Image (cartoon, rainbow, N blue to C red):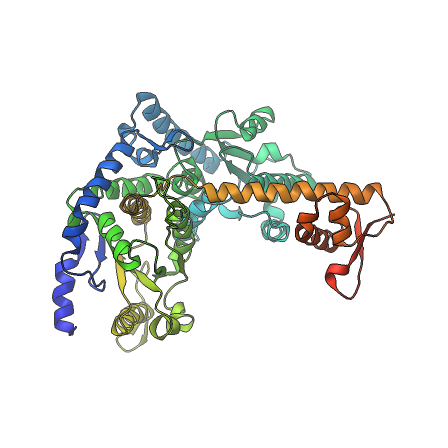
Length: 530
């Protein structure tokens, strides 16, 4: 297609909203003739399902719960007045708590103001807050922010080391709906120990975001933590960033949460349109359907041309892959749905994997994120007539063109600048696109049975580990191979798991287990210490 033809196509297909200051360009997607018309009946059904969801229909039958993350930025839409009041009062409480911390009315036990903020969570309880913190944070942050987002001991040690002496002025926010999520529980216990090693009372530094009546709620109440904020069962983790999960850390960091919510609300209003070409989320959903043949046949490569959007691909990995990656559709038919998401940032990608994107295996489509404003204030010219930001824009345009020349499809989302409002709009745009696409391919976007299966399997491993440790302690100095151990436990089918547990135990001295090494690793002898 010639450049003049592409320009006409660009004008015909561009969605632009001056209020949102957001554009969606699908001109480099090769929609076949009649595609929009063919998909319109499915989209009208998707709009109807979305409207029912926002009105309080049971959208997750596995857990018999509603899905109401849209109410978080439009509380008046909640189906019950009590829910509306809860949302409004919680936001007011978040802002009041953050203001009290910033003013020093809620302070560290030594009387000094809190200077640092440690967020303890996993999955949606960390990815959303991390994305918002990284995209909107900076030198003007009112609290320096840190994260425990895994159960990796060395990773947690690194964070505590980075906080250093500021631990005594660090506020810890523990985020877990049930309070029983093991990664978050482990992070809380590790943080508690770090505070206690420093001679500090963890409870005097701690805040909880959790479900009413949860294990964490009981702990926080019993130990008189500084505060407890709600997580509602009608908000899923991957769509919780505009709840207390994301708003409390953001407010404490000093981010304008009202503008974040306003951006999300404005985008929600636009994406309720039943006129498909006027609905940017519907256009995105159609792009995904065409590019992946409605079956996840291609991966989504996210290329944001802005350092502040580096974590957007990680955030979208969970939102999209956990929502759409399903074995069964809503009728119980095996469909093996999903869209794989990966990405880094431009122009870094041009020195990484763009070579393969242009000339290698064609198993993807690209989403470019373009940000028009380079920085606050003027930029120097790095050569006559060009700034660093001009180069970034040039590299984006060049990569987009180079990929299209090779038949690689792409969609480009453009925002004027990175701000709380634009980040809120991007969050809302993708939340709605995921919901609409899920309807198009007939999967339930609001449950995650695969995640639960992994948790159960991990529990079985830890149960077996306990049996192994107990046997080694009961029989000191007796040596076992992994095969002998699994037979002695009457678990011969778990010999590989036994081997992996023993190998991990042997590398760590935490449980009083030593190892005598043989030539072949699976012939290692394991015994308890004297």
